[in-house]
Length: 165
Image 1 (spheres, one colour):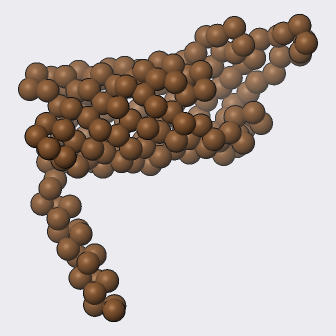
Image 2 (cartoon, helix red, strand yellow; image 1 turned 45 degrees about the vertical axis):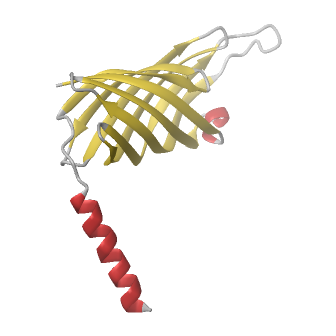
Image 3 (tube, helix red, strand yellow; image 1 turned 90 degrees about the horizontal axis):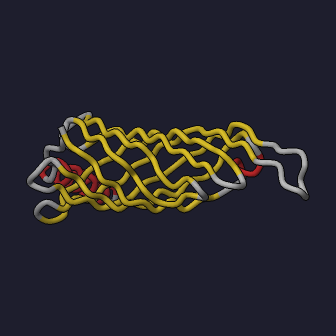
């Protein structure tokens, strides 16, 4: 049984190595979606190897209830799917700050810093021109910081459009 597990692991690692592809060195653009009010993010991707990259996202929100920003860093593994389609998965986290506006029933606004952990899974299409479109799902869980965000589990679904260079 032990040999079977080792053989399966080696086969998996070999197929991952064979399916590796070259990804763009840099990509810059927008990630648009809804993550509990964080609707737009400036997104930058930097390749590390032929099949891995780092993604940096800076999101902001200005609403009637609160003003906030969020900075996320995700390490991603990219795998080919079919033709110019790729799928990717990753893990990371980030930090943010939120300030709530005073309301008539809550005269004392509060807010603060929060830290979160994140996973990431998505699909992307790499056009023959330097354009990359993606759709991804990033579940986030608050770890420490401001109470309303530190105990929160968030489903972040977004559409990304990036220029590759």
